[in-house]
Image (cartoon, rainbow, N blue to C red; front, side, top):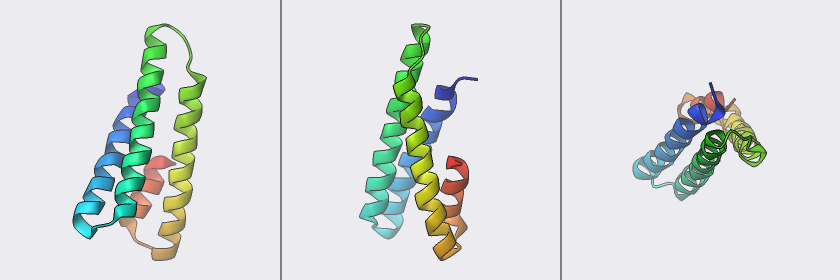
Length: 97
């Protein structure tokens, strides 16, 4: 399987999670973080898909995917350690890892 097969759905999950967090708790940080990082992941997946169609590698997309996933793992992992709440911190950290 190719990286874009995972990155694009992962990005949509993160965007939806940010919107849900905003709608349930009114958290602007959740909205900004979820939508911002989700769209970066979707963009990286799209760039990877376009490079794949041209039979090339997109190292920029790979680096962007990795940095976003590492940042989400770190931030949400720290939040999980502080709050011990599985949802959303533990789930996002686990998916990102």
